[in-house]
Length: 136
Image 1: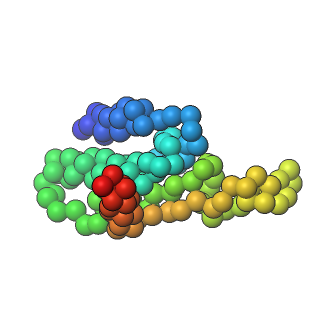
Image 2: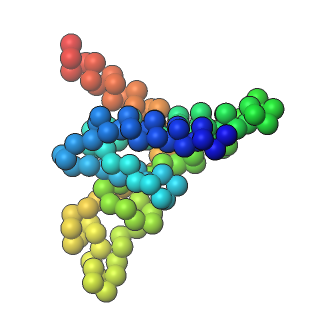
């Protein structure tokens, strides 16, 4: 069973390699241990893929236990952090003695965003509509 979870994570990270480039990557921490780097233009799709990988993993384990219905708070992460830097919270300024003014003032790094599954679906649908309109 654990192998399936690792396989889902491997599939997610390997599929992300196709989208990775050196142009302005964003970071999405997975369980605060594995940051996934994506170009900022794909940040919402990457976060949605992470949510779907979590859903598939949880569904697999639940089905093995005979549980065939998952509530939203089990099926999806409560939120996925999308940020240009790795920090404890996307709103944290990281003020330290060596960085007394914080990331936004000292380095021009704006706060990130934390999105739940509903906000992600909304953002992805808006992006896809814009891309379709720009292609027509």
